[in-house]
Image (tube, rainbow over all chains, first blue to last red; front, side, top):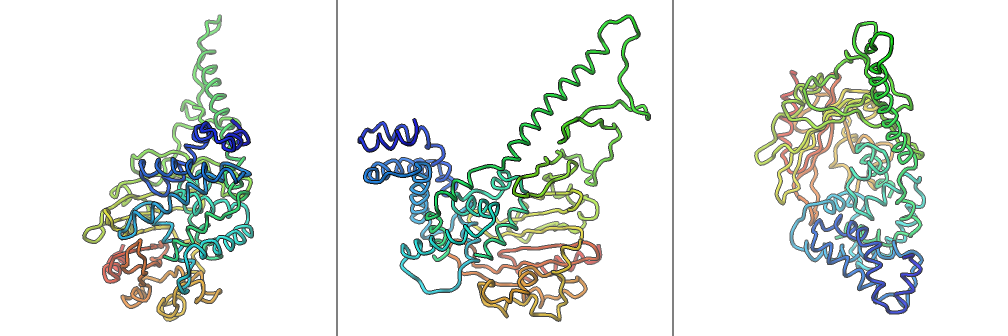
Length: 175
Length: 289
C-alpha cells in the first residue's frame, strides 16, 4: 500500500492503517529502536507505541513521508525508554559509545530546560549538517540519528572502519 | 546530561537529509553486480576450460594449461572485468600464520571513498598469531592489567597501510578498555611527532575541555594525538596525557591517548581505566625489541 493510501486510511480511522504501517515499516522501525535499546522486547514495545502515537497524531497531521515520520517517533520513544532504563546505572551498547563521542562536542554550559535545548540544538544541527559534504553528512546521520555501529556505516558507504572513525571524529570537531 | 540532549536533538533532523543518508553508494551497488557477474562468467569459463578438452575428438586429449614454470594456471576472481590467471606459487603475505585471509573488495564510490587494493589483508588474529606478524608483532601488548581480557586483534595490510589493532576490555558493566595499535611509521605521522620539551603540544592540563574550544587551531591535531620518541618518554609525560571525564554513562577513570615511536614502528594507545604507571611500564618494556 502506498504512503498516501496508508495516510488516507489513518484519516478514515480505519485500524487497517496500523497493520499496513507495520507491514511496510515495522522492520525499519524495529532496527532504529534496537540500535538504541539492544533489547527485543523493548524494541518491539517501542514499535507498537509508534503505531499508537501515529494513530493519535494522524489526523490532524498529514506527514509528507511516512517513513521519516515513523522513524522520528520510534527514535524518540526509544530514547525515552533508554533514559528511564539507564537513569541510575551504566549501560553497554552503541548508545553509550555515541554519548561518549558527543561529549566531545559540548562545552560546560549551564543546564537548560532539556526539551527547549533539544529543539534549539536540533535547529543548529540541521544548519551544521547541511554545511557538510554529502558523504560526511550521510555518515554523521547514520551514526547519530540511526545509532548504527561504525562497521555497518563503513559497509554501507564502502569505507574502512578506520576511515569512518576518523571522518566522524573530524565532523564532531567541526560541530 | 548535556550529551544526551545533543543526541536527542538529532530527532529534529530534516527529512531530506535522512532520505539522502538512506542511499547506499551507487558504485557499491554497481560493484555488486560486477562482482556477481564476474563470478558467473568465471564459472562458465572454468566449465568450458575443463569440459572442452575432455570432449572426445580425433586428436589427443587436452592437457591442462601450464605456465612456463610448469605450474597449472588457475583462473581466479578479481575485481576487474576479466579474470586474471594466477600462478600456483603466489607469494604468501607477511602474517605467516595459517589464518584465513580474504582479499578485500575494491570499490570506488562516487563520493570519493578510498579504493582498497585487491591484495589487501583484513583479518582477525589470536594474540600468538599477532605476535608473529612481521615487524609489528613484537610491539603488540602481550597482556592487559588485572581484570582486562583480550577482546580482539585485527591485522590490516595493503599497499599503503600495515597495522595491528588490539583491544582489551574489562567486560561486564565496565567501559574500561585499552586500544593498542602498532603500525609502520609513514609520513602521515610526521605532524604528530613532538619533543617532550614542547609541553604545549601534549600537556592536557594546559587546555580545559572541550579541547575544540581551548586548543589553538594550529595545535589541535598534535594535542589531540601526539607521538613521542621512546627515548624521551617518561612517566611525567604519560601523566600529562591523562584526564578524566565526568560522565554518568561511562567510566570516570582516567583516560589517555598518544603514540610512541620506536625507530620505524609507531605504537598508538587509547585507554580508559588504567593507570599511567602501568601504561608507561608496558611502553618502556618494548624499548629493546
